[in-house]
Image (cartoon, rainbow, N blue to C red; front, top):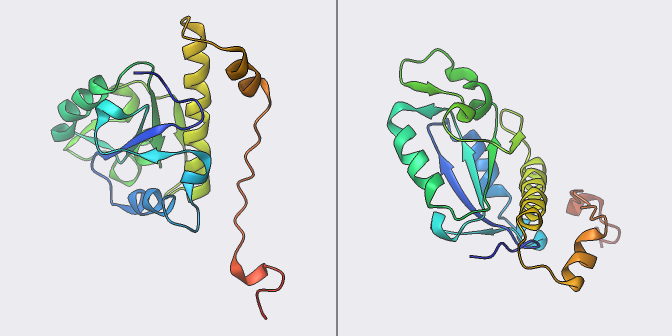
Length: 173
């Protein structure tokens, strides 16, 4: 499976969180934040994904399932840890049912901090992971074209500004 540099396909998994981060992850798919405008597409199977987005601390029950899902994602792949719980177990630290932070189970490429993080920070983390995947693909001698190299050499700055309908000129009319 070839990686789509401008359109990362993402698989989300909750490994035992309080669902605060999951609500924010769902918000990035809404029209208000619209991650699809950056090419981020949510998929229902890890076999179709490029990026694995994980929320919550890793529980003992989820450890085997998480490694199985990670192994199902084709290479090159990236992991984005969303929230404080995958990084340090967050408010669940010291719990008897926890295995540990996410990076003790699978390698993590991008951390998005916060409890819960803002939706635009999650989108930014996914886009950073996509850019990392593109550089990995090039390093492994993947199929390169002049047009693709030209497109990726341009510095892509993503304007992650939220514009509310409250401050849109002419919206009050």
